Length: 375
Image (cartoon, rainbow, N blue to C red; front, side, top):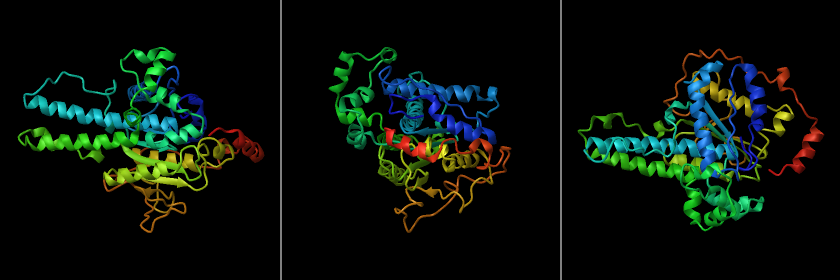
């Protein structure tokens, strides 16, 4: 869930769970510690270990550890993006370490991971990122205009080294030291946009090193970069003033340039919080239906998505607004590697007439709440 890294709370996701559980999807909403209790490193570690817990224990609650999809919104989507890209980096670095060891260089016991978890990025069936600030560098001025001052931003994203440093509240001396960090490095280090680029550069190094040692049989098993990532879907509202829709467009453009497939969907006229708050309260469950269909598609459902039904687009193509390209292709799969398979999920069809999905607030109250909503 979101909350500007400061007011995040798992109950922000209650409407999503309320909409999906009646149709057979298990929804687990983990919490993560907020600033100033921790900085971004603590939040990323919390989310990473929550994913590990889900993969290890979900079957105890009737779920399937082989059919897990990660969903994030706003700050939660940003943190999820950091976790996913760092898991990809960990996978690449472990392959590099294995290559070096097989060449008689270095030790195979050294831990080169960013994160403590042991799952691989490929164990996630997909990642749906919603209203996410993908590039913290370009978002700094936007954050500042919305009340997240430059010094607070540096305190959140400055990062404090050491496994125990983020267990205590940040004090004035810590904040002062973080504020003097090199800004570019600080924000790029926790920016999914720049971490994806880093994945690409380290992957090229991995392949280059592998090509110099063709007798290494493990070279044959090295995936393409796109196969190391889970399936991706980028969702954004075109009227989002907190995180402008250009963030999604630029991120999708980067993924396209690196040949990392992604689905995208832009909701015309939707604000930053419309997908998770205002629209569901008014009985509009388009976002929930889209997540339902992505879960079915990515976890083995064959009948969930049609070419004309959802309006998802391949890569950085905008299908649903004035940004639509002449090359827009409305599709329901990411690429040829995502084949429709026999649907054995036994999910009930998503039904927006279900009583649980009725409007829960009068339109007038929702519109008044928009005026007070800081996002």
